[in-house]
Length: 234
Image (cartoon, rainbow, N blue to C red; front, side, top):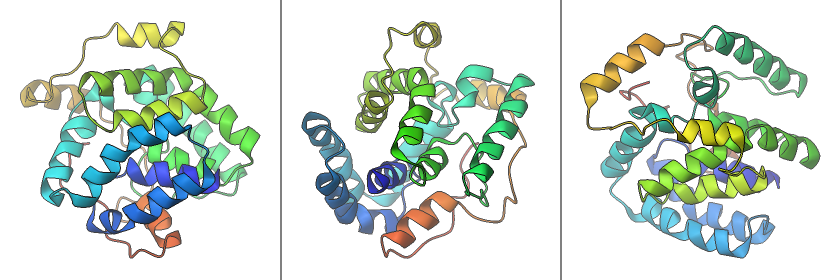
C-alpha cells in the first residue's frame, strides 16, 4: 500500500512539470499494487491523462480554483470540522505529535492536516494504522468526493478512492451535516477572500522550507523536485 498512498498524495499535490513527468510511474504503481479496485482505478485515468498532457498553467489555475479558492473543497481536513475555532489549533498539535511518534517530521509550509501530507505520513505506517487514520477522516473524504463530483472534475476519482479505503460515506451523520453547507462559488473572489482572511491560521513550520509532499514523493520516484507552489491563495 505504501506506493499507492504516495501516488495518491502526488496526484493531489499542486501540479508541476516534475509531477507531469512522474505520471507514468504513478500509473504503474497503482496498477502493480492493485490496492485500488479496478473500477475506481479506471476512473483515475482521466486525471492521469489530464495531468500528463495538459497545459501546466491551466492545470495550476484549475487546482487553485478548486482547492485554494474554495473553502468547502479545502484539502486542509480540519477546516471542515473545526473551521476557525480554537479547537483547530489543538487538533493540529495532536496531529503533529502523531507524526512525530510515527517518525515523520513535517518540514514544509503546508499545514499538518493537508491531505497530501497526511497521505505521505500514512504511507510510512503499517496497513492497519493507515486504514484506521483514513477511517477517522472517512466522512470528510466522502464529502470532498461528492463535492468534487458535483464540479465534474477528475480529482473526484482520487477522493472516491480514499473515501472507499476509509469506508466513508455521505450517509454518515457528520458527512450529511457538512454536505448541508452550500458550496463555495470560486468565481466570487471578494467573498472568498473575506472568508479566508477571517479564518486564516498561521500554524506551520518554516514557510521557506518547501513542500515535503512533492519533494519526497517525486524524489522516491527518481523525479527531480521543484519548489513548492507560489502565489496561490491559502
